[in-house]
Image 1 (cartoon, rainbow, N blue to C red):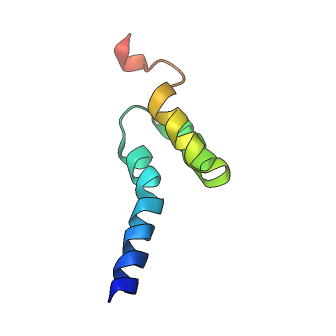
Image 2: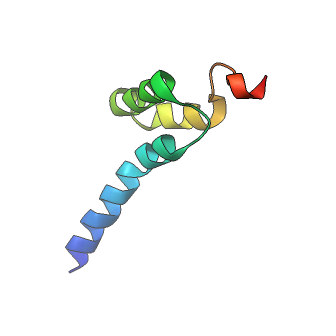
Length: 63
């Protein structure tokens, strides 16, 4: 039982950056896709950069 709980917990922690990026309204479209690919290929460092730097370009709604 403990092993199943551990595996589920690790899976949730590993998928957390994807849920945060996909559910965020900071970015959209191709920029969001780029951040998700960054998390896949660069790991959690990309997620930390996302939290600090996103959005890279200004939203047209803010203007």
